[in-house]
Length: 111
Length: 113
Image (tube, rainbow over all chains, first blue to last red; front, side, top):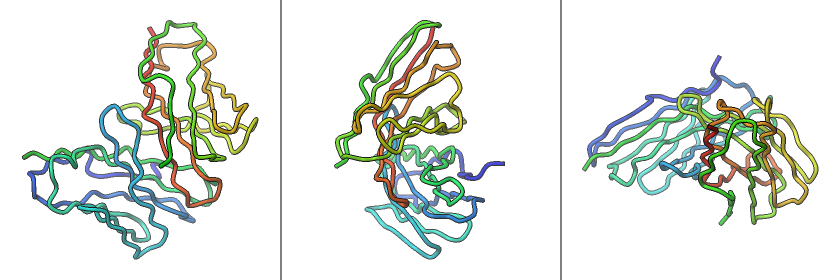
């Protein structure tokens, strides 16, 4: 059973067309949820950490939110340079310091 | 900024060879991790280390070993490379306390022929 599920698998947007990516998790004892951006041929780049339900973090056109069972990454008025794979990962009491990653959402923004 | 450096971006080896992948971090992080990333499977943890000379198995340790002789360096070893070990290998490091994000290198794309 997958502990971390991301949807959709792929998303195509026009420049300026806002949307959201979803990360749902089934772990218990969540310690933190992490969002990463990964460009082709590169390693994941850390974006945000969310610790508790109701928390929100923002960076430029990105806003991450957290509920008890899922997180959303909202992308407002995206630009082509926002195209990347977005990964979420959870850290939970049962895993210690390890992260469990979702499979990612591939985002393509066309001009 | 945290800098995690992996020694090779691309590597081609033959089946049966012993392969070494090197990772160095410059932020004095206690924790270091090795993952492999495959299409549709996401990142899977191979091994990790919380301190020098310490290692723990991750989710897919079979066919791999690691070495951590210095705090800043974490090596992944493929004892006898096989074609199913063709993958992208990612190294990461983090501070030891919980809630700390892991910071990744740019990966080594390894092909086993």
